[in-house]
Image (cartoon, rainbow over all chains, first blue to last red; front, side):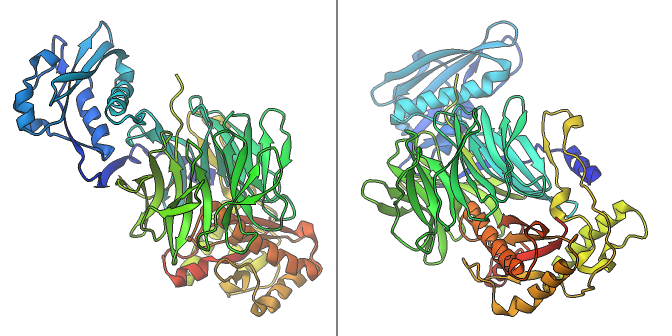
Length: 428
Length: 182
């Protein structure tokens, strides 16, 4: 078995790449021209195509329609070179121009300007230093800045996605936990196993991940540091060890344990002191905890009233309250960054769909088509949910804006892709 | 689909048996073959870590080489209704047989692997699988099996027996498998 495992390990893994496709954008995406950036190096090509990445990011958001560079009549690289009249005729509303400038050995400066074409006015001008290794990240950062300037919403192009893939290698399942950039590039394997891997959860600083692994033959919760890949087993109690969820202050994990009596309940584990606090104690299935952004409450799934519904308990312990009432199946809550909405898996006449529950009005809005959608995860700006769905028999990821206007599918090369978890904003 | 599942079990058991060397054909040993349960062979590989610190190989328990022979794959599987964990009365005789074997052979043990269909959320399905495994465990304990002879593990929807997204596949996936050894 060890030999089989090492064999699997030796197989190249760079093919777990995802690609975002817009199924449905906003009714009228903003026509934008991201003109190919000038390269000020003495020779050859630019080491990285910054402007193409910015165009791809903005296009992927579903809110912008980037013009193909083939359709551009001129390719200005600074504001002074723009003939706004020409761009107005082409129907472009916003133009981005810029340059990549070498600054000595493997160092660069990215400078760009954003203009309102109708007014001929500069909306944003920025210059950032970069290195060979960080050009891609810095290009995402530029896209974030442009996105925020134009929409008023903080961009998430510099964030990352974690997800689980399942492929068949020599007739046996191979489970992998992967972390990739928000556009699916740079996939890196965190951990792989011939036994199931489940429920990835980011630490609030984005540096660690908790997940469930069955590598020992039963469920255990592990915490792994992304950079060093060092990992530590944090819960291997009798019975189920599941559904880890990091508290907003990073000190605790909420988790589900069945202990020896087989009854699933929610606990909060202090990662430093290892003190375990029990938060629920009914004979129902209580699982899938999620912290409110202020850390005061934990939302969870419970079937204490028959079918699964969402409940809430203070994270310090206390009275449990039912939150959802609409329909006979609402499970796996995730709370929006502003704390006002819950994303849930909702059974809509036999079809499992992602729905949003407004906390104040307890109004439920179905966002996706089903029939087997699950695992919604909020982008840190609250604008988008990534979730798992099916295309034919294959598990794939998809995104929907929380207002339901923008739908994106994420195609993948092979195998099943599931359990997406959107990272928090990067910490500098 | 049942044939495929049986085939998979045979292949897996055969692989483990092959590791133990010739002459040990686990399939012949029937239900209580004493070979390692599927789950015990798992390992995880964290990338970036020196390969010397990776998971260890699966352990093999002693081959007991005895027990009831069975050609019926279903005689070790209990199936359930959607979102339910009640064991249907039709399984009473089968579970009684297993319980009797364990009572008569105090060194034997059973691993009860609970599963759910793919509908709904994954961790809730882990809960359903655990509850089903516990339901089977309770019945066997009422018949005198000691708690330490029974281990439960829930795989939720992670290890389907049937691959389809239809009622038939779902009904085959809502199950508890009785696997010899812990």
